[in-house]
Length: 265
Image 1 (cartoon, helix red, strand yellow):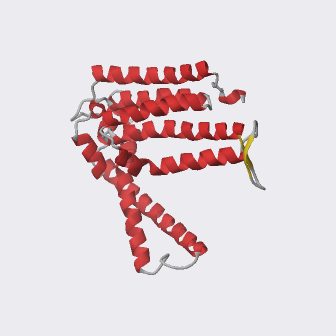
Image 2: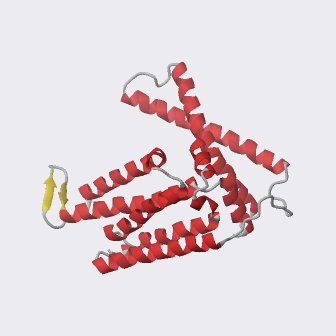
Image 3: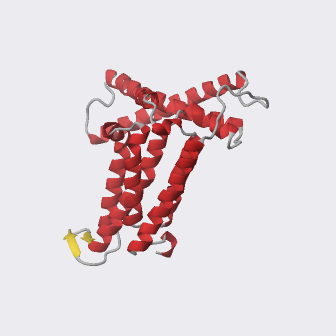
């Protein structure tokens, strides 16, 4: 949460854009990437996304701190696809269980780049968007039901709290000698117990929050807004950027001859 506050306080360009325009700018290239599995369109989208990160006040350090699980997952997915994907072309690496060929390596690289190109822009949006501003935009501009919007806002606000609760549960269990020692199987069981404890705690917090919000009149028929959600010229530029990025990704893949529609594989 401290990182998010720091990003919003530095007056970066994208922090001033309407959350709905940023959401649309993320979804448009994502739709283009979802249609094809190729490394060219994914590379174009990923490079453009990384180039935009400074406009949101993000640094490489913050990117790694927030996105290392996504980067690790993309790397694992790329390796798995290269190992078990369809073999074609020259064999580059062989083991008794699986082979890596030119075709499977290209498919693995495409899958890894595609995952990063889809995940990192979403991370960028959340890093430069205040959850309350997003909820205001969804309710005022998208006309979504108040209960859905408030539930979304509560979920976003509770993400940071759940991280803290996980750490507290871990410290409490280690203080009781649970999960602090033993073999791998014992540690896996301890992790499962801690996960179940977090689930119970999250249900309790959600129930209390729902009752509190209902008691204070959230979701009622009449509502006023302390911060009206408005669109500006900056939002038009953000939307245009999303459209251009999606078109550039598709155009580059088609020009390179790598465009590969998913359902035609």
